[in-house]
Amino acid sequence: MRQHHPGNEDRFAVVQPSGGDRTEDVEEALAAGGPQRVGWFCFHFDDDRWEWSPQVEKMHGYLPGTVNPTTEMVLAHKHPDDYRHIADTLDLIRQSCQAFSSRHRIIDVQGRVHHVVVVGDLLRELDGTAMATHGYYVDVTPMERERQDQVTAAVTRIADARADIEQAKGMLRLIYGMEESAAFELLKWRSQETNVNLRLLAAQVAADFVALSGSERLPPRSVYDNLLLTAHLRINADMESGDATVLPSSEKTG
Image (cartoon, rainbow, N blue to C red; front, side):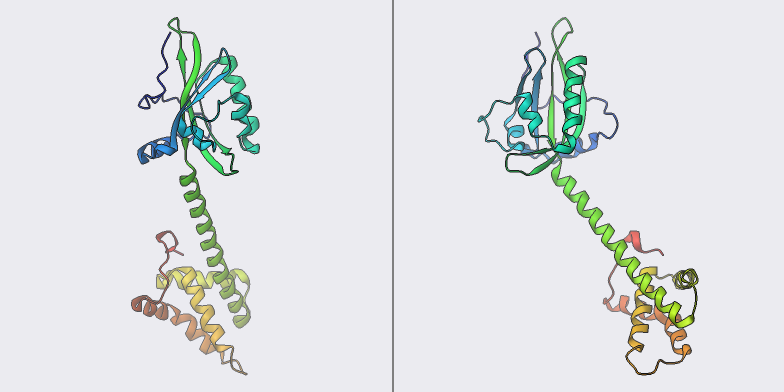
C-alpha cells in the first residue's frame, strides 16, 4: 500500500481543472509562502475518513488538534450557495474515484467567509485501486478581497465619470437647445480635438457654466461658447500646477 506522508507539503499533484477553476490562484498563494494559507487534506474512500493539516483546521476556525473532521463537518462549513455543488462533487468522487479541483467558499466557526481553492489527486493501492483523494486547500481570500475592491473602485470611477458627463450634457442642452445625442457628440468632439479626457472636459465645462449661474441675468451665448472652446486650457493649466486629479491610464481616453 502506498504510504501517505501528510507532512510532505512539496508533493503538489496538478490536475486539469474544468469550468471556472482557477489554478493561477493556487500558484499565487503558493508563491506568497504564507503557511496559514495553504494546507493539506486526505479523504479515504473505504471508511469515509478525513484528515487535514493544522492550516486547514485553522481555515475552518478550529485550534489545531481539537477536532476530527468528518464529511458532515466538512459540508457544514460550506457556504449555503456552494453547498449543493460541493456535496454533489463529493458523491461523484466516492462513486468514480477521480481527481478534482474546486473554487468555493467556506464559513469558519467565527462566521468569517473564506474563499478557497481545493485541488485533489488520487492515492492508489499497489494494484492501482484508488484508496483516497488527497491534496491542498489554498485560502485565496486576500486576493479575492483585493479583486472586489478593484471592481468597486472601477464602478465608482465609472459612475463619477457618467455623472460629470450627464451634468455637462444637461447644461449644453439647456444653453444651446440641442438634443441629448448632439450634446454628447459636442463634448466628444471637443475631447478629441483637444486631446483631453472626456470626463475631465465635461467636469470643467459644467463647473464653468455653473459659475455663471450666480448672476441675476445669464450672459450672452458667446460667453458660453468661449468657455466651451477654452475649457481644455484651464484643465491643462491645472495639470501643470498639480491641482487636477490624475486619472488611471484606463480612463485617459474619451
